[in-house]
Amino acid sequence: MIFKKDNFIFGMIIGLLAPLMGLMLFKWYKFGVFTFKETFQFMVYEPGFKTLTVGLSLSLLLSALMFTLYINAGKDKTAKGIFAVTMIYGLFILIVKTIY
Image 1 (cartoon, rainbow, N blue to C red):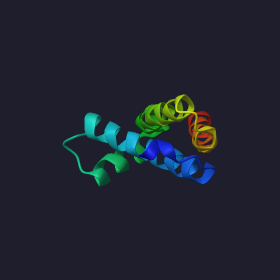
Image 2 (cartoon, rainbow, N blue to C red):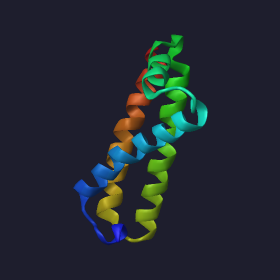
Image 3 (cartoon, helix red, strand yellow):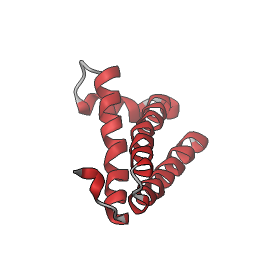
Image 4 (cartoon, helix red, strand yellow):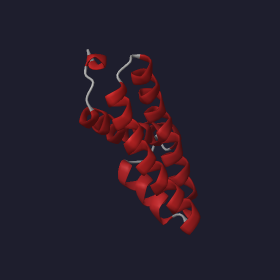
């Protein structure tokens, strides 16, 4: 079972993959008829990066869900890894929102 492992590196991997999966779910829900290339081109070239920052922010919800599940399961090292990567990811989103 995935909740049996308690490792900081494993948490970092989950912390990297969860937001990417969240971003894919956002793409599928919001831009279902477009290809991945078309969607991400629109998100990058849109003035102000509004859709990109919304998608990135919403993708953090999946990471928060994983963090909560591991905290409740008592796997603190894994939860720390998820939290560390989530903070870096959140800082990146904050920089994109404030600079652009």
